[in-house]
Image (cartoon, rainbow, N blue to C red; front, side, top):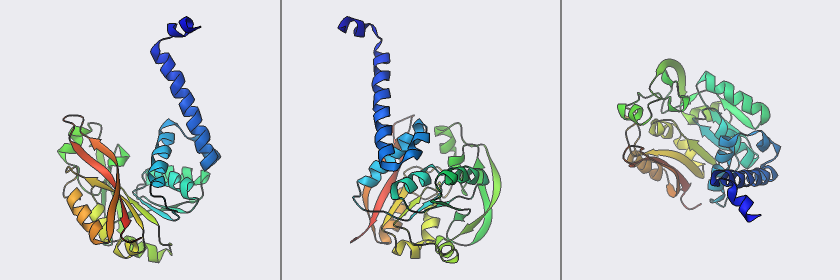
Length: 261
C-alpha cells in the first residue's frame, strides 16, 4: 500500500491535503456563520477566515460597523456575517454599488450608502481605475503603477463627498462599534469629517501607508498621529504588504482601540 501511495506525485498528495483542509474550513465556517458561506469562492473564504480571526483577537462583541470604501462589498458581507448586525457600506462608484446590491440581496443587513466620505461637503471627481480597488479622489503616483502595472488606466467620475458626521446625522444612522477605512490615500480627510462619530466608536480598522502611492496622500505618520490624537491606541497590525521589487514594507492595516475601553 505504501508503495502505491508513493507513486503519486507529491503535488497530487498536497492537493488532496489542501482539499480536505478547505472542506473542513468551509464546514466550520458554515457552522459558525450560516449557509451563505457555501456560496463563497476560494478568495471570499480566505477573506472570511482572515477577517474573522482578526476580529476574534479583539475578544469583544461588535455590533454596528461602517465600511468606508466598501469597493465590491465583500468586507461588508463578512462583517454582517460576523456581527449579525447592520453594516453600512459607503461606496461612491456605481459599478461597485451594483456588486454590493447583489450581496445585499443575499444578506439584507448590508445597507448601501452611495457617497464618498471626506472632510467637507463637495462635488468632485474620483479617478475610477480599471482596477477598482485602486480608485481614488487623489491622483495616483508613478510608484503605484510601477508596483502594480495593471493599474493607472482611469477616467474621471463626478461624485458627492460628505463628512461622515453630517451623513450619519442626516440619515439617522446608529453609532458604530467599529469603522473600517480603506480609501486610497484619503484617510486623513475621512477622519477629519468623522471626529464626532469617532468619539462614540470603540474600534478603527484603517490602512497605513509607508510609501506615497497617491499625490498628497495620507502617510503612516500622519494617520497614526491623527488617530492617537482622537484617543485611540494601536492594538494590532495585519496585511503587511511588501514590494515585489525590493521587499520593502509598503503598507499595512492598523487596528486601533479607544483608550480606556
